[in-house]
Image 1 (tube, helix red, strand yellow):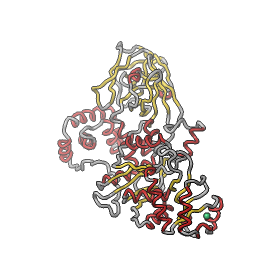
Image 2: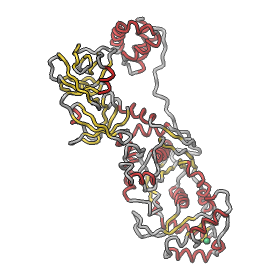
Image 3: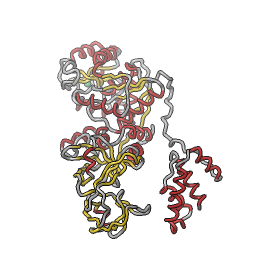
Image 4: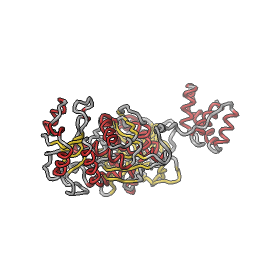
Length: 547
Ligand SMILES: [Zn+2]
């Protein structure tokens, strides 16, 4: 038995930076020999002795001892991490990638993944990553979103080597349109929108397609004085093309709304495919990783680049992804906020970066999670679990612990020792930093615990063993290893509110130390879960992160 305990203690220690844990060793032992359960008290005593000895030695020493027992172990390396696949045709120092958000909504998980992957590739090949604002629709682009998107990216640790605004390139677009018109590769069409749509579906051409180059240029020069919807410039491709985006698509249209950056200076705005493919050329983008939803548009964009004699960037499509049941469309979220179904863009039910931040997710957990989902075309519907697991891993070691109960049940402790307070470690991994919790005769425990463990011996964490009932009997200041341990809150306490991931709010009470918390601090309410401190004044508001 002794050798078996030593073996498991050594293995556990080596796997955890030289520190074995009694409980982990016990579990392994029971798994190997279930009869251990019959003499658990003695075994635990023995384990704790062995673990104590083992933990005093270095990992090297532990490995030597383990070998002496005839067991060989590879030191556990870092968990296997997903690595981005190589980019085709990528040369060190020559890779240019871009992330082109429209400044019309908050950054969410899916878009952040595109940004992160493009950024990571540029970094990997010592190239350049461009943040490009595709603000070609003055009706959708809003001033505040430029900053919101930049803040979101910065917070995630995504840095750009260059920032570009589509709206800075309008004169270049006009020059390009003239060039295309002069080559007879486009025409100005003044058909009504319904007619264009109908003919596009039927595969029929309109009369404007036969106009001469001179006529087209003349109309182009007048377009800036025409009314919205009166004319568009269309590429001359093929009205019967099997890919409907290729059926003489519009490249320029008239929009009267003032633009957040250029105000009323321009009325003629490039349409998405033309806009984005030209910027790829002008910025010298070599590779772009983007969502698969643009797949059908690739042919058109490459066509535009080709007629201008430019080389198309290498496109890698990744599956659109989001967490199951969570809206990510800006339009839908906006509507839900307007109708008060959501509290805002940072509502805890959303996967916008602001919402994740408010809920207590740390940037590194988000980026590790995003990269781990891989660069594949498969549409991924994910659950919160892997993201929560990643976050838990990162904050567990830092989050200080506090006691709180959500459904308080008051009990009285009979004959407690006469002490005024207990010193409780702020974190189980660091016994030196402590907090004081006042010791009162009457305390509160969780209602569910009271129901479940009534009349049983339970360990009030850091306080001692009692028989749990309204009039609880104090047994000792020791808590047995195998006892159920529960948190408690003294009679003088602080009210807290916890905003849950489903948007609801729970109320509870906590030890008074929570009054000293700082906004944004990440903590763990013992046996409840991790939370981010959202507000500390008259009210203490926490946002629940996860278990
Ligand atoms: Zn027409």
